[in-house]
Amino acid sequence: MKRTVLSRRSFTLLAAAAVAVPALRAQGRPEKRRVSIAVGGKAAFYYLPLTISEQLGYFKAEGLDVEIADFAGGAKALEALVGGSADVVSGAYEHTIHMQAKKQFVQSIVLMGRAPQIAMGVSTKGIPNYRGLADLRGKKIGVSAPGSSTNMVANLVLSRAGIQASEVSYVGVGTSAGALAALRSGQIDAMSNTEPVMTMLEQKGDVRIVSDTRTLKGTQEVFGGPMPAACFYTRADFVKQNPNTCQGLANAIVRGLKWLQTAGPSDIIKTVPESYLLGDRALYLASFTRVREALALDGLLPEDGARTALKALASFDPTVKPERIDLSRTFTNDFARRAKEKYKA
Image 1 (cartoon, rainbow, N blue to C red):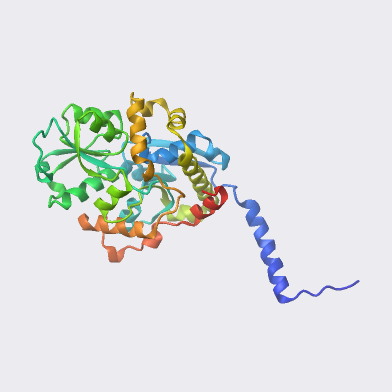
Image 2 (image 1 turned 45 degrees about the vertical axis):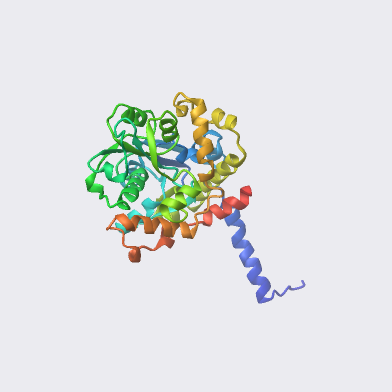
């Protein structure tokens, strides 16, 4: 029998191939098939990629059975993750920084929004003679939930005018019909909230917009740079233990983002639940047009965006010390890159 002698290089290549094949075969098999996702205000455009990926069956296509629990705001969704009732949060990226400041590590695995899509408006009825932010001292400001991203934006805007968070009262009003009712009934004097609520209030003349991050330009003006917004984030140990599950989640979202790049208004209307329209299709679509560019394109979180978020948080939150935050541990683009390649987003 003729004996074949392999060179060291050939042996190394064959060994690598032997290892790679099982890995490739295993890819797509989630370690955890049933995944619980917590979200704070699912009907908001802020979380539209989540809704699209769910409604079009993209999670199921990845072998995932997702259960989505909707909370009043992002802070409540985060509590679900910390408490163990949720595996993943569909929420604002800055929570990963806040948590690291508390010595708890959570990580973004795919980006859904490249601008916060949050506007701050003053009630034209409650403060008819509004002259400037100083008029908000001692007033009630509606946010989706205390501690949420809408609260963060309000804190940032007010701090730049020399107003401390303790000088106003924050009221949780959610992100849909309850928010509209709270402002129109006079329960609050101003509001920081997402779409479609803010456009509906603005176009009806109920609010005067004083700060706007619904566009990339507005976000640049408010934050001084790109500001990553909605993402999927989870505990660092969950990422390590469930890489295939995380890949499936990222694949579904990136596929949804790709669909959104070419979707028309009628496609959106047909896909989202009727209740999301808040009884006014025309205004809902006007809201979508306004925030469309704020949606992420490929799921990748920019490094300069992470730096912007840290700078913004540190500017008004003394518990966030930039020198103690390792931004590389707050997000990974590995899953989004593979998803982008798979779906050519």
